[in-house]
Length: 215
Image (cartoon, rainbow, N blue to C red; front, top):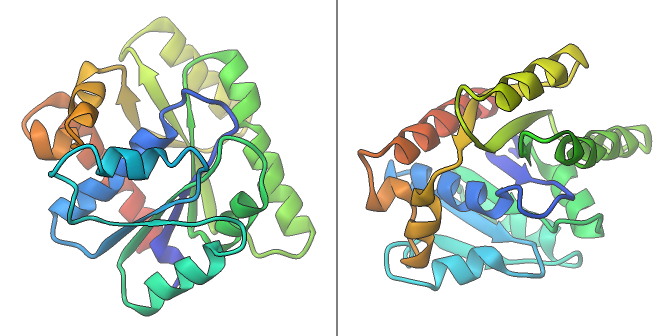
């Protein structure tokens, strides 16, 4: 059942973690799939986004913390939810460890910056620590390049450097687009508010690629 769980995790603020979590869930929800968002970040960014407007009002969103995260995820899976997307804190916390142990895939958003990558790479070390301690850990992890300018030198350089270092990246990328902020103000996402835009297209590509790891 853990193959139905996607955990978003990074210790670098501003990476687009919550944005990816909401947009990914909204994409699957818009396809008619059974989806739940678990907001395990104390900032409650996901719940604030959902409550900002009507478009996402019908999407199941549940708050969780270190004491409840396991129960919440298991309950959703027992109810047959097809995709559980977990937004974790932007720092090391017990709730993140549990979410990773229950995830089929850990997505690590990272901006195309050496500093951002160094901090984001800590999550790979955390996964290794959990496995060494006997935890099953996620079936897979993948870095997701976010907030990039497609075709830019830094974007190409970062992808090449990370791959040469042996890190696993998704082919999908999330561009630096105003559509994400604009639709968030309405409590929506590009998929719902601007379905023919470039942002909606890259979210669809991301969801399809993630599906490949979960099915």
